[in-house]
Structure formats: C-alpha cells, structure tokens
Amino acid sequence: MSATATQSGGYDPKGQSGNYAPDGMDFVDCSNFKKNRWKYVGETQPEPESDITDVDTQNATIIRYDDIVDLDERKKFKLLSEYNTGLRNRKWTNQGYTTDLLNRHLIWALIGQLGLNPRYQQEAVGLFLSLNLGKFGVNAGIVAYCTCAVVIHRAKESERKCHPSVKDMDPEFERIAECEGYREKDLISIYNKISQATEKYQG
Image (cartoon, rainbow, N blue to C red):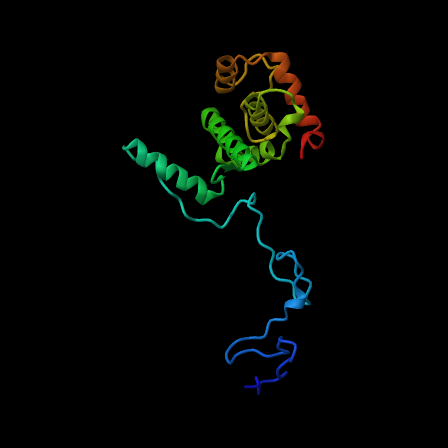
C-alpha cells in the first residue's frame, strides 16, 4: 500500500513529511532549533526562562510555619517555604538570595531598635542594600548602624544627634553602640565612607 497525503506539502518519499501536520495542529519547523534545546534561532524569539537564582518578585504565596507546634511538621513546611521563595532547590541553596534576606532582616531590625521615623526607613534600607558590604572589611551590623546615622544626620527635620563624634548622642544610638561594643574611631571611619564616598562603596 502506498502512503499518500492530501494536506499541503504532500508526502516525502524519503520518510519525512514536508509541511504536513494533522488537522487541528500547527506545523513546527524543527530546523529552527539547534541541538541545545534552549537555543532558538527563528524569527520570533520565545521568552527566556528565568534563571533559578532570580527571585520571583511576583510571588504572593506565603507559607507560615513559625506557629506550627510539631517540630517535624514545622521543618517540613519551612523547607516548602524555602522551595516556594526560591531560597532552596533540593540540596542547592541560593546563597546570594540568602545574603540579601539576612541583610534586609538586619537593617529592618536595627531600624526598629533605633526608632527611625517611617519617613526615613525606606531611605535607610535603600542606602544599606546598595552598599557592597565586602568593601568595608567589617561586620555588616556596624555598617547598618552607620547607614542609619547618616540618613538621620542628613535629615533637616530631625533633631536627633547621631554623628559618632558628638558628645550628647541620641540615647538610642548610644545604647546600641555600647551594647555592640562599637569603637568611636571605627564608627567615624565607616560613617565618613558612607556619607562622603557613597558611590565608591556601592555595587
């Protein structure tokens, strides 16, 4: 029995069809695809798949596990939460994302302890997260502290004194500095780097 086809393109005697496609299905020209299945060279480029290290900023799903009493269940849902947010993929951990989360928790915790006005909170967060903490060569906590001090000191409306060299420093700033054991010379050095050479320590 000879094989025939009435659709456009007909039958190729070498065993391959021309532009033949079953009814209801679009013809796919596989010649546009290279061996690497992610590399497409056709006229219309498909949307690239997001890298696994990219954070899904549109993700609105939150898995609550902190209030689960059973430890095994809490561990289970904590792991699911890490998968859901992109923090973990099986045994692989997104270290860059982890560091970003820790830095965000750090600056927000400090903002709460220092009692920053809501007007300056986002400014402090934005400035701190824009800094390359590795360039300072010190603990991230002292950089976050000095970042808050710089933001408050720049604010014309604020009367809080938080420059490291002032004698009558704001009580909250003074308390944190004493509790953490920050030395005045270190605070002045980091403060000046952030306030006077911001661009040098960003990125």
